[in-house]
Length: 317
Image (tube, rainbow, N blue to C red; front, side, top):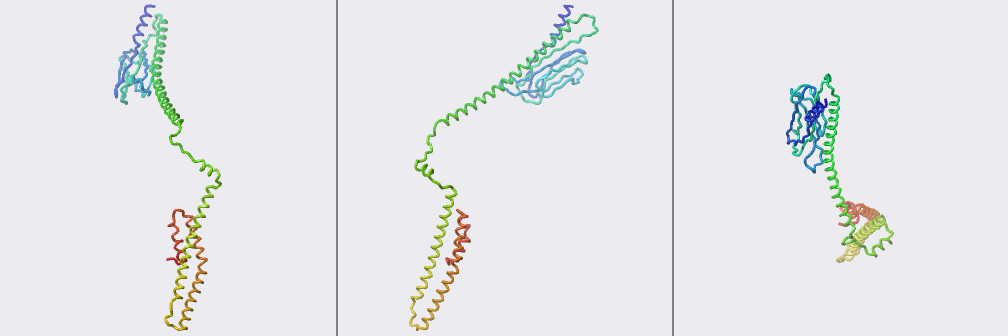
């Protein structure tokens, strides 16, 4: 019985194997195991990257096919898995790893395969030891598969951590350079004279006060300009009247002279009345021009109509 148990142990060991396969771009890798009815087959795999600097978790497709061509088990975009099947027919069972949806050249698969030979329960031989050994082997294979998976996962996570650490290092270097540059004073610092600073501290004017002063100054300039135009027009009128009075009558008698004096008197009277009548309208036009210029700072053409109205009332051509 001891001898048969040892033989069974060697038989079970012959069914266990570990492999690493490099998947070709747009290709697949297939393997086969010859099983008998009710034999068990276990396949565990982990997809990795042969590039040591890679940080991406890769995946592949997997399926198991019976001798008759029927798909027993299939997975899509799997990163790792542990598949167990029980053969329902004797023959060559094929299992494949596919990379047909990717152009990756460094994608590889670490997989372990082991099988369990079916033992008839009606067998009268004492198989308690064989059963215990078989269960122990299954546990050992499971532990080994998990260790292989942990190794691949640790490599991927280590690459990710190293990539993150390198980015943090570069960013810290940039921050340190900025701090060092800001520590040294500027070559041409901006300086203000003490007189200017004292004048700013002593000034009680606000921006509103400065704006009001500017508006008042503009109003004064407009008023002075309008008064100058009005004065020039009055002087022209006085010169015209004076020239009319100084003309000789060319030997005309007293009646003609009196008639001319009456004409001059009527002109002066109408001019005085017109001046009195227009004084109020001139003031209103003057205020209108000043207000328009204040509202349209920097845009004097917007006050064209107001200026023309004032010139019309003042008699300026």
